[in-house]
Length: 444
Image 1 (tube, rainbow, N blue to C red):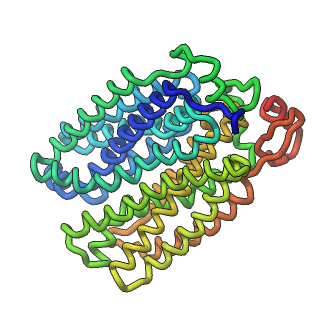
Image 2: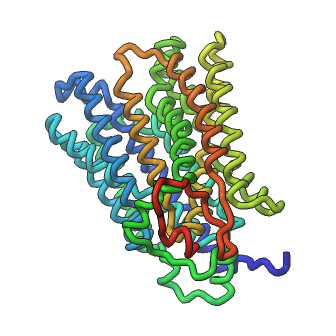
Image 3: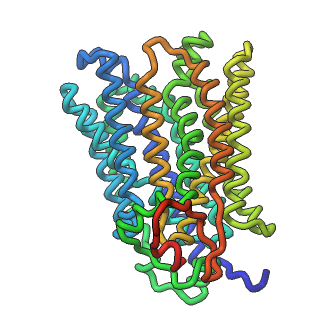
């Protein structure tokens, strides 16, 4: 163990500050996503919108967010996390502020598009920050910490936004959250620094890069990004993330309504009951990262230390989701939903931690996660748009359990590595008809 480099006090300070700001930004990110859902009735009444109109507004965010995921990995390679996250925060916060000033459907639709585009860089940027400042053996827990912001933000969104809306009105609620995001953007830009912007010592650089392939490049071409679709690992992550994000969106969008309509809970009780599962999600996210790091320290390959917990947690998620759909007791239903979200955030953290390992292997910052997020978000949107006005969540929950069983098996069987002539490891590539050559198959 003496030969393993350790983080200096300065590096530890940078790590703590970066993670604290990423969590704060992530919490704001998820609170902003919930504003339209919380203010839905009041917005419809004031602006004269139909239920279908509200569906279009929800779709505007999701589709913009999905497609904007695709270029974010390349952008964070090109301009760095400091500028990209500051721009993303500013854009989505400006869009949120505009949401409080809109006078009609068209203006609101445009604001929601901007919100989706602005929020897209959040998690790819987080993955790059963790890769930049943490040794490979420490990246799992760091990933769990920044990833817990999604469940933490969702847990506090409904109580906080309801208070702001009832106290000051829905328009002020949007403006307040927009201003909070702009402040966070300024703090991030003024405080955070990319590694290239600091004079790091040889010891500090050794800690950051130990375990990474030698001669690693930090920028890739667009052609190389397209070639990611030739790798089994890319598709394994896409299918694995299908099950993860599908369930996350089901609960994020429909859990309060499910508790009210099918569990007959009061509106007042629903707000707190719906927050409990997401609080467990926070713990699951952090624990998933801790497990990944623990396995690496015990000699498990970094890729397997992420892959195995993610696949097992997806299977557990499927079982808990089925149980939650059919138990009669409300308390048991909340318990099983909490267990389901606990496990799905274990999967989510391991998936993001997996991207940091594959980034080292494929010579880019977070190649597969934006692609996986794109596919999973579009899938979530297709599920959302096919729902009826009357909420029937039980069939969706059962269907999700089947999806998770399938995606768990796919993720575990396709996300693997194989040795290449240079002695390092690279994700296994499917053999397509014809001849295929790329830097990925030789230089890594």
